[in-house]
Length: 141
Image (cartoon, rainbow, N blue to C red; front, side, top):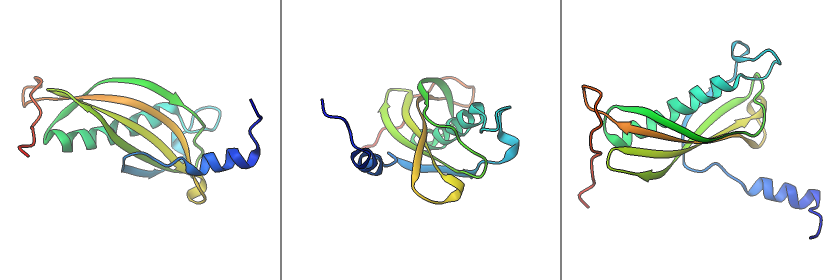
């Protein structure tokens, strides 16, 4: 197999774009760091859950709860001053559940090209006023 050149790697990186819709955007601040000075992974997970919840609630036309997270991958660190952008893409809809792919991309120091830093799959369940699962609305089209 031929060795990949730096030019080929650069072209492949430039081709990758966020999937789905921009759900949230926020600036990474010093109070969100871990002891090593990078942004704490738990803070990133929280942003991902909030972003997914916004999208899932819109699809469900009401309240949703987080049922599970899978395939979580931290690909690169997030630094103080990075603009953190969470993108959501519908993966599947069940009777009461919505599964989304959630990606986190950053603009290093708020500029330059986007860098993918984290990805995961989040599952939400639509619930009624008592917190019981409820069927999702179906389009009549």
